[in-house]
Length: 187
Figure 1 (cartoon, one colour):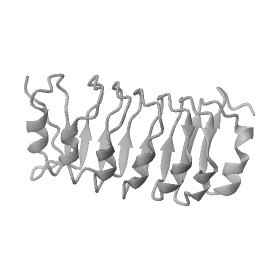
Figure 2: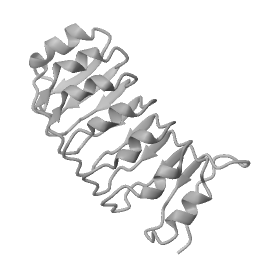
Figure 3: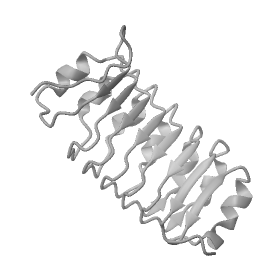
Figure 4: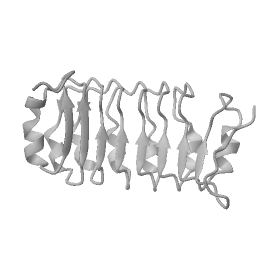
């Protein structure tokens, strides 16, 4: 099966979208797209992040949503241009602390994953502007989150936190858009 590529620029490949289920030519597709800024691998039934992604040094946006990924490889933190990582609807159990080493990561979307805590290592995510853990199993947030001066959005709706339990975050980060509810907006 041939790969269908979404071309957003006539001169250089900007966005690479993979729509085929046959991954036998993934390495070839990625090698031809070494300067891609966006890679979309949604709904591919992936259980692991393809190693070939580590070659995409210009990659700014990586969308791996709606797969079956449970563990993330360390090379994601070594992608020098990565700004947005979308991991919605996977099986990620543990908050990916090593991504604090990603030099430019601004947006981390982990909604609808069974992540249950934000660890102390969150303090290493200095450039993070948006963190989405909507509809996760989140039940603990380390106070180190207050060190994230650039954080503008924290979405923890449909988690185990009631809005009334999160005043300390709002006080510590007064410019933060804290989106939370416990199944409703009733408290």
